[in-house]
Length: 181
Image (tube, rainbow, N blue to C red; front, side, top):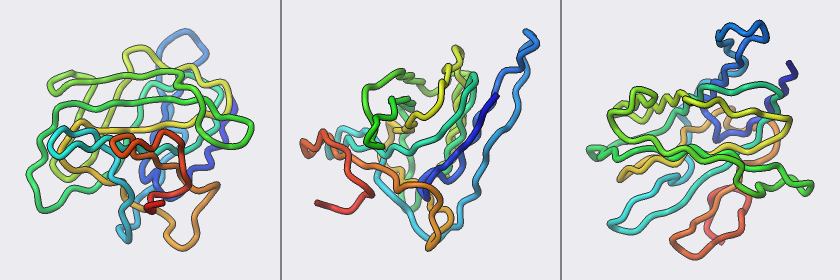
């Protein structure tokens, strides 16, 4: 197994679990990053009123079978109206940007593979693990009325900056960070 996770500030808490090579199914935590509570990024969510469809992507490098992602986000001042979560994996293009979507999973509330709480922690277990073959991008896009990623390593990010796009505003190309163009 090879793992080099170079996640930037947006991937506040990312836990990837790798299946054991023995044939029996066991998981091993290979990366976790705690939030520092200094900033939020996004939004990274899908919601209909008002229409919001934006997502944040961050890179990682793993060769192995990913069966769990845990993402730490921020919700304040509103009651979250969870309607599900989209988890997507994208190819890592030669120019360092997200490419073609390789896998999408949409989990609905009540799914035993999805746990969310009212402060923004999202825990996703994949019924079919994602077979990572090196560098990829991952996005977590809740179907909820409010959700932002927590920051980590503020002032000293690790790896390259995260990518953002606002599909509701017609922005199909990924840009570095979540600042308005």
